[in-house]
Length: 104
Image (cartoon, rainbow, N blue to C red; front, side, top):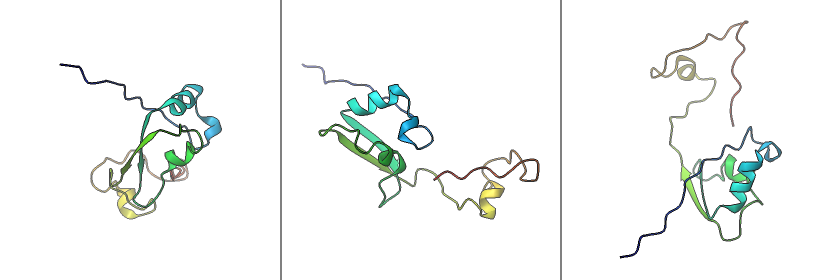
């Protein structure tokens, strides 16, 4: 009986969204990947996939993982500010605590 081939799953953070700010290691791993998995919304390319455009091997096998992975609420909705009843509120939004930046 032969043992099936094995590999590694490596998670690479792509930084704040600018390919120039990826770590050297993440760049090397992405360029050498035989398989690539990334999150995206249905019908969209996905932020991570857009960042690595032009960096992938011609023979890479892609695995887009579509949302809903999390519950998405509009950033400025009352439910988001309340934590949707699932998460405790950590800080109040006031003059001493500017609103958090919305991720795209």
